[in-house]
Every structure is written in C-alpha cells, then in structure tokens.
Amino acid sequence: MTRIPRPGLGTSGAEGETCTRSVEAALEMGYRHVDTAQMYDNERAVGDGIARSSVDREEVFLATKVHPDNLAPEDVRETTTESLERLGVDRVDLLYVHWPIRAYEPSETLPAFDDLRAAGATEAVGVSNFSPDLLAEAVELLDAPVLANQFECHPLLPQAELRSACADHGATPVAYAPVLQGEADEVPELREVADRHDATPAQVSIAWLLEKGTVPIPKGTGDHVRENWAARDLSLTDEDVRTIDGIDRRRRLVDPDPAPWNR
Image (cartoon, rainbow, N blue to C red; front, side, top):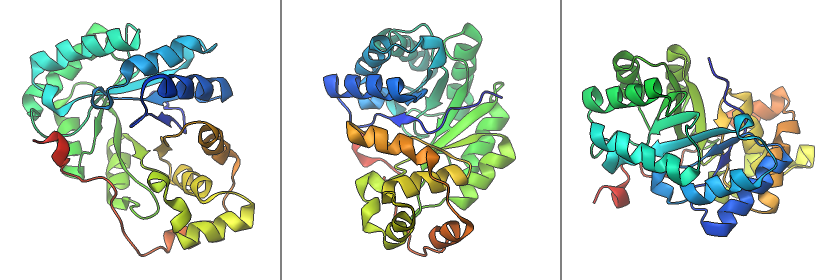
C-alpha cells in the first residue's frame, strides 16, 4: 500500500501568494505531502508552490478533495479534471470524497472515483469525514482500496473508534485540525508535556498523533510551518502519552454537518 508521508501540510484557509509561499517553503524544508481541496479555493496557489519549489513533482504526495456539491458521477469526473488543471499536474496521488453529504450517493459517486483511478487521474482513492459505517460501505463498493480516511483528530477528539475502523479496513487515518486550530496552548496537559521537552503544545499534539499512527496535516504559514515539521523529532515518553491519553474533555472544532456548505 502507498505510504502517505507524515506530517503533511494542510492548506485550508490559505489563499493566494501566502499559500504559494507556504507550500514552497514547506517542500524546501522537507515536507513531501500537501493537502488541498476544491472547497478551499486554493488549488492553483498550491500548484504554483509545488512548481516554484526545487522538489521534483514525483517526490510530492499531492492530495485534493471533491466538493460535496460535485459528487454526482459526471461532476466528479469534470471537476477533477478542472482540479488537475488548476494544480498544474496530470494526476494527484490521492483523491478524496470530501464529505458524504449533498450530492453523495455511494453507489453512483464511488464508481466515478474508480473510473478516475483507472484513467490515471489519481493514484489512490480516499474518503473524508466518514463514520465507521460509511467507511465500511465505501470499502465494499469501491474496486480501489480506500487509502485514507481524513477526519478531525487531536487530543480533545482522539477518535479511537474511527482510528480502529481505519485499521480494520487498511485505511490510513489522516488527522486535520491536529493542533486544535491554533488553540493547543490552551490545553494544560499539552503545556505540561511541552514544558518537559522544551517544545510547544502544538508540537506535542502533532507528536502524539504520530505516536497514534495517524498522518497529521497541520496548517501553517511562516515559522509555524517549521515548528510543525520539527515535531517529528519530539519523542514522547510513556508518561507523556498517558498524560495526554488521560484528558477527559472532548471538543469538536469542525461541525460534522458542515452547514455553510449545506445551504
């Protein structure tokens, strides 16, 4: 199975030249996984960042996601072609169903993703924001393996059941919002562990997710891109992991039924 480089660079909310510079800088410092989506409206900027970098395209694991409005079979095919044009590539490494809502009809949508994989538009198929039951259904309907399920995951939303379901189906769990949308500093347990290692709470959160076998895709610009990358070198002790695992508060940062896109 394809190995997804970790951590990756998330680009939700990044726009224009700022997005392009962040992608270029991330690749130059060692990132090899860049995540975008039709919904983010920044595929062109992401593609420009990849093109500007000195890193060969074949070394970059590039993922994008099909908008919930575009999940009818003909729209999947048409808008994926448009995504490739904006990204400036002839294929992506991973193409996701972004949310199983709006135009999503499993028996119609998923075969279109199989068709795109067969045609070489994507190397692999993934899903995003899928529950264990929806993931099992997708695995059953797709000819292609489900390479990944991307969902919100961090110390305040550890998603043990969903991570277990991914393991059962051979899908890699990809964690968005891994640093709690910039609010990791507000979690005392993360600060406690960070103080032990002269690290930041954000780095601790990323390191914990790496320990749990996920692929975190933190967003970031400027120094945050470098800070997040450095989390790879943070080795958590068993005590650190127990401290974080012991957090009993739960908080979801992203609405599971994304109302702004459901209007």
